[in-house]
Length: 431
Image (tube, rainbow, N blue to C red; front, top):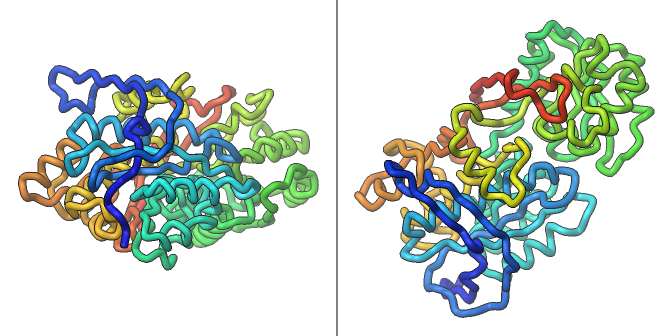
């Protein structure tokens, strides 16, 4: 049986957090300043029934550009929850971890460390392939596995003991949004170059199915192995096929692909239209010595309309040392994942992960709408049922533990090292 007595240090929550409440706010809308301090993970007496959260963010690896907003989202969520009185009469504890990527042996030992700290939920990983490496270990230990960024369709039907959840939508939705975008811009033939693992394969298949259903053709359809660092052959094949558009589905290695495409005359500044996805569109420009070579590149990523949540993104930026440099992808989804777990714990009246997992879907659907932890907590304490829409929602989880629909950002590069926010478009897509 899982113990509820925690032997954890309270100093590991967040060091030196200052909360300043606004005059008309509930405490969650104030500025947050965090100073990262060394975390002493030496076991010590904790609090009975205390909710303990671990993170598995991409601090290193091919998705490291997504690490800062996810780290900030987790810190901000815990700060807001604790400012509102915590969960079950105690502050929530946060232990941060690094997921690395599939080319490194980081995620498994990090999960072992978090499990030894008796976390109730692990938030992460960002990479679907990394989550597949650890999902059985996490859920097999009756701990909640909750990703803010996994998009592989495989997780919808995965045997997870009812303990896997995600605030990111399945790529069945992103593939449709991407296909609609490529087709709407007059492209009849699209070449696809994709990373051959669960994320890349699932999104590539979804794009192809949807693009073909719109009357388009996909040729060529090329996979590459993670860890590949030379793409001459693949890009030569793309150039030889002369498609109207090229879709690049990858992570950090997309920078090498895009440079090679530019050198072969099929880059974003050529007659070929170039598209990216959530694994690269948000930060790939900063990986290039000359980001102007991808001017005109467009792409999709799950995202709420950032112009509608500037108060949140300002606070998110302040929750990470050095700021986020305009990259907010999956920060809101990370924040919301932790709030959803906390609300489910309140409804369950327990920090037992199995009890919490049984309530997660329902706190996102069917009750009284609420958009903050404090507001939803008041509903629960008043005997009502919350329907948490959150910062990145609405979510309306289906029984598989994922959103029924989601908002997507269509981002465009115009010469700088980040997408031009003035050109952002947003669409909402459902299954």
